[in-house]
Length: 318
Length: 281
Picture 1 (spheres, rainbow over the protein chains, first blue to last red):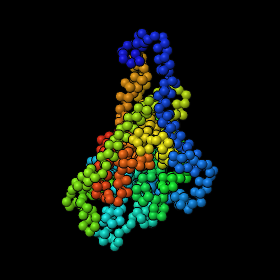
Picture 2 (picture 1 turned 90 degrees about the horizontal axis):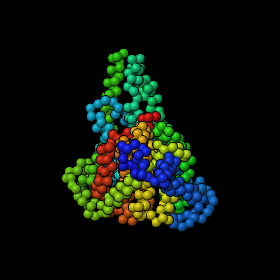
Picture 3 (picture 1 turned 120 degrees about the horizontal axis):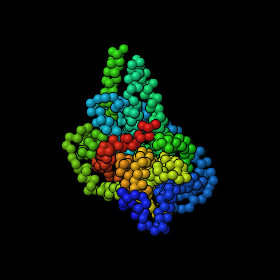
Picture 4 (picture 1 turned 90 degrees about the vertical axis):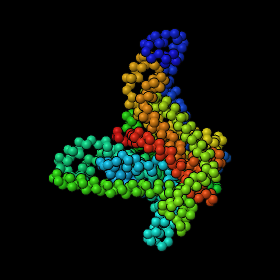
């Protein structure tokens, strides 16, 4: 590339000295079409090799009895048939819906409250903002481990404090009581995931022009009226994006359940990603069954994904 | 009227301050417990003499982690994987984003859509076929395998983020440079990249912390100590009965520190990058 060295030279003279063949090669390389595909080639390789191909092979796997390393044997719809006849699977569907809906719902309201509070003016507000966002920056595995210890039956923080305050006689089994386990897991999901909503909503709040509120105030609108007529409609696009993104990520997050309860007690916290993990990588290594569990939820996810893809590209000005 | 407004405003401020105190406590207490536990002797952690505040703080748990566990090896593996996948995904994503933002060719919009779409497909849908694929390619139990696997998430995400930034660099600057004899590649390196520095910081932060925090692939693809990263290494500690909460919390504190420090350092840019779409929408 002779041209790259001399920025100040005008175009024709900088190409002087290239043979006509070199010139043609360079022009070919610099054409948008060639260069575009050349630049995108590694990314396409990544998409195809690490997402599209595995995804397609997962679909094939669901029709197979397959273990790792060995070729699969086609068994038609047997995997799906077995799943729909299994009580464990039906419980998993129910759990996943509850886990995702409650988790996202609580994160949404807590995140909105946090954003509104942080949007007020006060002393050292930036410091509070940084601090409240930290749970999002901590690796989720570390949060899950920490919470498992907080919930510990004998010496965990919660039981420790409750006993000291004489509020309970016997310690509570937060993670192994069938009625409490799901609640405890969702609590951790909320602790970790609320800052994402806070960040998104806070950015949205700060983008609302102050004049709108001033004008409303002159017209005598109360704080509540300002909230429902200015703030909420202005945040609506962000609400939709954040809820959808969080629904995808929350339903798919495996580490909280895997570390806190491993799906127990008696499948009370079993969600689809954990069930897929157990089927595919537990003792029996039934990859086909595991893939079927993962993919049964894909039709729901794909609606969200397609919708979000459109939004995310539109917002990039495409 | 004005009086009613001030009263309302004051009440709201008070309510906000009260809520803030609760939120700070809700956020802080788990941190506190993690750090406090890591500084306690076993006697203060378990049983009747358990304390809420460490009475005789000690670094013994930290010493145990380094002396008796392969934590340093896990740390090294995490750094190798995070740096490797970050560098690779940066190069691939810069090229892809530039092509989509600036070059005109058929299929451009489709590829842009493909990148975003793949970013949104969660790894929990892909880990089973990925495990089968990695086994066939003999890339399980290897850091190379993990670096490659993480590109599947990092490249689409980074390309999407960079696309928007590259579009915001004025085309005129680039055209001027090209009139002066820059070709596309040097225009990218000399004009577009320096002007997108904030975006590059955000992208580096995201791919590094993603690799550092990733658990599922690391857990599924590795079964030997030599290739474990910090996340799967710590979970493995937990499943061994000998290893208990003091040292485990010590290693948790140390492993959470790098991403938290990075976040605090780059926070302004990170929040902006993460919510870019939302702000514009």
